Image (tube, rainbow, N blue to C red):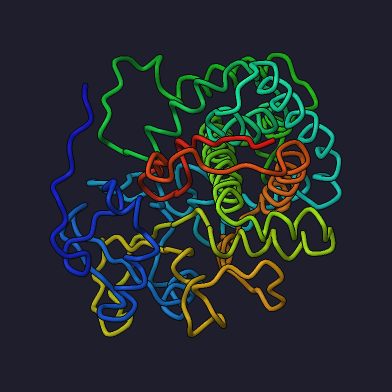
Length: 401
């Protein structure tokens, strides 16, 4: 079934659509405009949804588990039926008190020490991709599809003990769920992420290994083993949230470097600036917009949000709020004070932030070492993903020298 075209947006303040290509192309400009004239936008689409754009409002909602539930995190035309407080993809869809229990299962695998052990895999992956690019002998290629979009796929696959060659399947699942939820019909159950994961969980329960899926299959809550639905949902979370978000961050960083030779030179000649640069990439190009459902009527920014309404949490907009950051609309490669919200706020702050940082750092180090001088072939040819994760989907670059 072809994608359903979205009606055009006349006014982002009263009829926004974050899944529209125009939003993907111009999101920072839209946020800036709304922050000035309508800080909390509204739309009747999706059955009613809100879009706060100020750091203060986004932070308040993210930290409020009384008036907002995480039962739904991706805005759709319907409301999820997964039972609270567990949700369909714990812990990100879980509410207190279950959230803390579900999150605890993952902390060991995503601690700084544990992630250090995966840096070699990430670096080897980047070098393999660069070698594949060089082997083609091309001066022009797509840095998004040939490089950025493969790195987290391969690392997450290894962590979960899944075949790397299933990467193309992961990309299809991500596209359906993140970019165009509800718009693409699936011909059969066998084509769904749930079917794929149910099959893998069954296989792993019968043949345990030392991977993350095996760990979840043997985990328990007060002596009761995790249900298959819990294991499946958590794996789905790691595939969806751990892949698309990171490749978008890598792609956006390369997109920036392609257009800013001064920053490229600073990165190459001043290694001490790189940790600051990484955090500024995360702030300025934060890829993730989360969502919540209103659990109880509440007023935010003077707007009455009703039970059952959606509200987006555009962390990228919060990161560009001049009330929260000096020179918020400028990329400052050595920015010192940078308490950004790229990984969220509150109890749902990204459990995989250590992994994402490591993959972005390694990906940029290897790219800049291999291709210190490059540029966009055509800036207008770059396309951005739609929906709640924003990053380059197509990014033709030209290697100079």
